[in-house]
Length: 265
Ligand code: ADP
Ligand code: MG
Image (tube, rainbow, N blue to C red):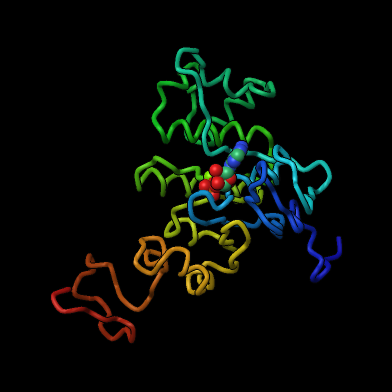
């Protein structure tokens, strides 16, 4: 298939999208498109319409203006921000994965194995830890054989190692199945590093670009403030210093970028 510059076929796109609840306009004139294989991270303050945008893109909320386009037959794997499961209702993992679509035991087992939850079919959803619960949600999304995974704050409530592990898992899965990822995050310093593009939302698109560009954009800084963890903790891999203190004395001290701070050795 010929590649058309400037006319890349997006999997999913919002065009001039507005969403209203009653009289309140929650999203105004939003343009967003996700290309195959891309990782796009959506950031923005609470109530800025991130979940609303995802839900409108999926088609569970109507557009008040503008529209949403999907590639024909697009398969979406969606992990919602909140999923309430009645604790009084025993819900084994295997049964949960068969909702709303049934899958073969083999497919279910493979999806669980892929998310590090092999053999969990008979465990009760209510007994899972936060991280295990998110992995099962991801397994359910993978059963859709998605061309795009849409994840709404998937690491909310996880501790930092759990969060880092979950992002690694998403990245592995993406490489393996070649899907695109559209993810809402409040956690910039981990997610942004893996993102091709970051979109900063506040009822409208404030700014967008590579993680580096967005983190330096005045619009972004105005929203998140300079003192907040999000803005300053942006993950960057720096090569101008050396974290590895396990080297012996054969260490190359002639390295031009090798800088030691006082007390570092
Ligand atoms: P975010 O995910 O960025 O925190 P949301 O998309 O959940 O923000 O919400 C954006 C705004 O829309 C909020 O003011 C919220 O109260 C409002 N909102 C979200 N869902 C509904 C709904 N179903 N009915 C009415 N208002 C809603
Ligand atoms: Mg939300």
